[in-house]
Image 1: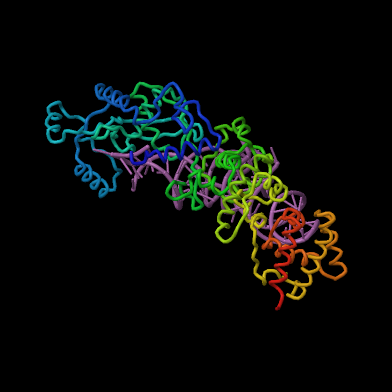
Image 2: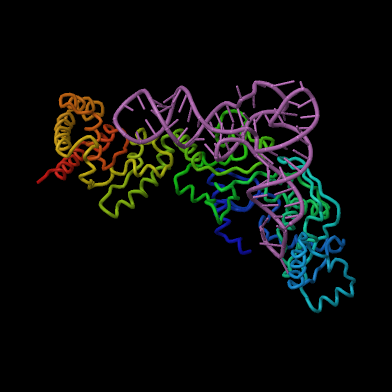
Amino acid sequence: VARSTVEYERDILDGLQWLGMDWDEGPATGDLGERGPFGPYRQMQRLDSYRTAADSLLTQDKAYECFCTSTELAADRAAQEAAQQPLYYVGRCAHLTPDQRRQKRTDNPSPVIRFRVGEGRVDFHDLVRGDVSIETAALGGDLVIVRSDGTPLYHFTVCVDDTSMAITHVIRGEDHLSNTPKHILLFRALGADVPLFAHLPLILNPDRTKMSKRKSQTAMSAYIAEGYVREALINHLALLGWSSGTEDEIFTFDELAERFDLDRVQQGGAVFDRERLDWLNGQWIRKLPDEDLVERALPFLAADLATRAATGPVRLPAAEDVAALLPLVRERLPRLDAIGPLVDFLFIDELTVEPSALVPKRWDATTTLTGLHEARRVIATIGSVSFEAEELETSLRVVCETRGWKAGDLFMAIRVAVTGRTATPPLFDTIVALGLERTLERLDRARESLSPG
RNA sequence: GCCGCAUUCGUCUAGAGGCCCAGGACACCGCCCUCUCAAGGCGGAGACCACCGGUUCGAAUCCGGUAUGCGGUACCA
């Protein structure tokens, strides 16, 4: 109950939907109602069926009431630990006579219900692990299936649910492999067909422990906020523990649905590798249709500018702005949130640049000053005639030629003056995007800040 | 402690007895391209296939044991 908050549920369901996962049966999501013929799909709404199943096991003597107190249980456990024995329920209440039961009930009116685990071993064939065999003696004794307050426990509820929901395949994490014999025993006791099992490898942290909500970033919402696209997340997740057997690695959702096969699922756990996710994300960003990319990237640019707005006036970008910039940024986005640093200077009204940053590595302040002066002159002249990237570049290269400058140095000086950054999209396209007026303005400001007086 | 599962380059993996002195991808390094940053191209380094022993003419691949890791062992899920 403690873990079943609406927020947790929403988080899971929304994440699944965002990834494009859909289901034929299951609980409602934000806009869709509960689907499927076997509802309700929440444990709390199915308490009656658990009660009925438990009663049935009780009358068949496949389960029994247990009145042991927590003190008794703790004592058993302590003794077993001291003797270095496996921990198990000793079966004190397993064979009570009706009289004894009545007696016990006066002391403890709310017993738990335990399921008789029996003897022997449980063998089953797991679809990814092959044959598995566990001695029932290793199961810890008769297990509690209903608490003293009448609510059922997980191992019991899943079996009751799977039975009444006509489940044929149970596909889940490896952490349930050891629990599977309990489930099989329960299915049999319930008179149900035992479903097929497939235990998938766990997704691991870099230290190779199990990825979990507590220790790891597991909320899809966190990845969305960082600018990962659904296609990349799906692709990456699919490749953890599964491979196509070919050298292809980039798969669409549909291709995965088509090619995925339990037979090719890996048995060992897989570390969730961010580097690889980032690479995949970049691959997918490059593949997205223009319109789609604009729509997805715009919120990230807006968010970036919103924080910039604190230090000075900014202009809010529109979809057309981003669309126009697409050719410049597309190949430079490992994640959508990288778009801000790449183009935000286009939307900031007053750019302030550290004077020292203006001077390229191989240059001094004086050279930079003349360089910027020349650049201003050329850009103003060319710009008033034809303000195009190619024109600007060739003219400025001519300047370098006559002055004996390395083009890279001049370009870097201009770049910093105009954008405030040393890493930007191609300079001349950037200048065109900025506009003639603002470019000249920024060059002027840069020269002023460098002037001795 | 007991039980179960796993173990191929740092990471994700290919590999179903000879095609493997182990292939691909990410990351890393170098070169090319280049106005910066990327992207892209080319090349490099990187795995005694956890270890030991068996089976076999032949083992990463089959068998046994050991080690290590992970998971389970609750009136958690």
